[in-house]
Image 1 (cartoon, each protein chain N blue to C red):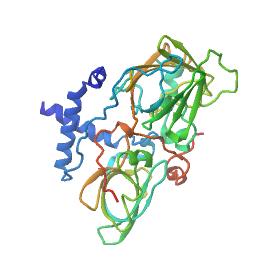
Image 2 (image 1 turned 90 degrees about the horizontal axis):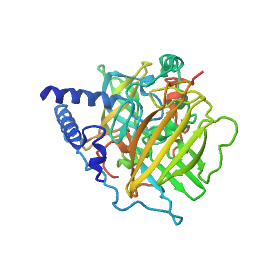
Image 3 (image 1 turned 135 degrees about the vertical axis):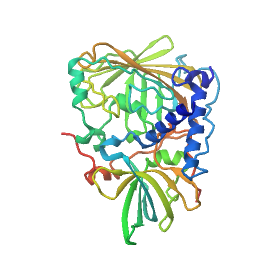
Image 4 (image 1 turned 45 degrees about the vertical axis):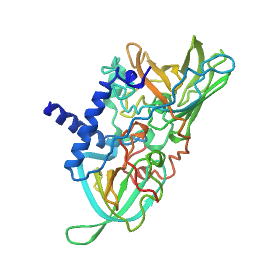
Length: 262
Length: 139
């Protein structure tokens, strides 16, 4: 499937992009700053069939460009969200109460958690064996590893990233995550979840260059029903993962313009 | 159609002023409605995560030097967009279009940086999701 076709489900595809690019150039020209943004051709990943491991499973290994999803209710390039979240009264209250100006854990470089790490604009490398599926997030150089050999969830202390296990449904790998500590948010804008969050990620790879990703949010304390976000990842063989040291120069926190959450 | 174009354009201006990285909430620190244009001399570039910081001396209306600091995107994303730690050097004359911090300090979030060679480059980050990132000069 061509990339242009894949995007048509989100925005109005290339036509929208062309209008945006032309408008942006016009605006910047009016600002006297031309030539500013020469629109680049969208990156085209290598074409080819779905790769497989030596044991015949779909192989998701690679460095992947993910869409930046700061708000799960908004559609964007390579992402489709859900405009009206089905909040429970508890969830609605938690959402209305949230104010990033009073402090958000990410500003203090605390772990983003699974959903918000997948949302980040920085790439993610996937490494996979018959036993494990490793999420290597460039954002803050975090990782989380899911056994995919059929074992059950561990019964441990709740954590920021939760406990993940995976299983295959045909050529789709389903990563199931529970046991969250409830201290994270689903996205940058701050949509809430509780410690009852059950996150389901469905990975499929329709061709060499793309992953189709579904994230299903199942949290009966926060939402009245399951809902999902769908997105497309693009293979970037031209990228290598880089270190991201969040604490190194977190001036905004040190100088008091953002706060540590209470 | 003109109206539609205008609306999309207005949306883009807002979009550029929205969160530039996933590190933290943009709105908690900056006021997107308070835009600023600063022309001055670079005194230092901090090339470190989670954001680069550009320091510049700007002459105010009375001719006295004011010390400003402006946040850009993460070095990782900027590197992929063609920036390097040498893209800005002390004594470079630049102009930054950005928005002001809410706390009233001489702090801004840089959106566009007009370089010594006259070109303007996007200083923030929407990561790989920014298809129109121009490249700064290679040094």
